[in-house]
Image 1 (cartoon, rainbow, N blue to C red):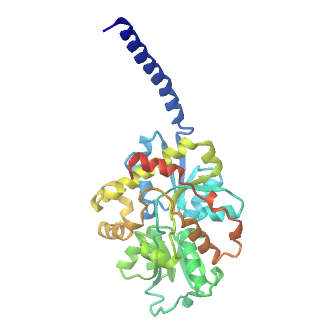
Image 2: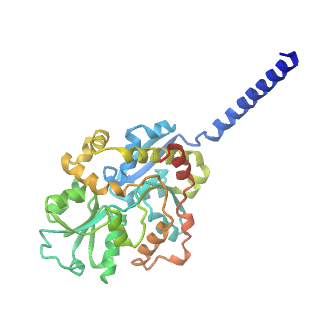
Image 3: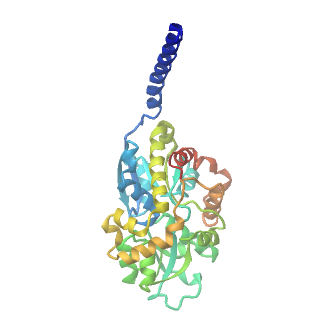
Length: 348
């Protein structure tokens, strides 16, 4: 081979290597996390509503993205939100519709990865104190247990009441949490009805403690109650946090979508092995029965449906007179930019 050919080849190889070495730091710089420690507030971590969050934590998917995540558990979504508003947490793992309520109050939060494509909330009446139940009108003056006042379980109850001409003030809402306390409140007769999530609702249902009257644990039930796609559990944060920490937000979205991908093929036995023992509430069989009921309600790829915002806004406006629906900019309540990249990364 001619010496000049060798030198040309050596030069071109050297140039390629030099270009690669210049590009590598740039690539690393692009993916450098602005924050490696992130505090997430959640209302009812042991529920299936937030199963993708637990899976991503337990299987090390947050760590794989370079994140140290601290998850604080609260009695309900409204309390978890207060933690972020108050500055003790960065991100909420909560119900999407809170972003609409917050914007109505002049606070801009944005949801950036979806965990649930159905609310998974069931409303049931006590078979003990309301054994002859025939109509929602009978709930007037009664005590309704919700995860926490102002949470999405409260929202569903308000929506149902409004359809029968009842106001929130016509009943007494009592916060009962999402686990053993909720079971005890219903079984001891402290409440007459309950709006809650699984595994609590399946446990009450199978033991004959409640009669379910509205159910959004399936896509069909969600369509019947809300008249469209209703985005549920998600990660959402102040817009300011997402603007300042885009790589951190991407890492969080990646971890959740990784969890959703794992859940697509996981069997009940895999779930049992992965979640903490305390989540089973002492009954493995009923826990598995609950999982089978809500499985289709889990998101598949972290993306928000196009009509989801409109469905949520319509539902909230139907019972909340203070909500100025015409002033809400739904495009600012969620973004799919992070979930789209995560979906491509994990082929979810």
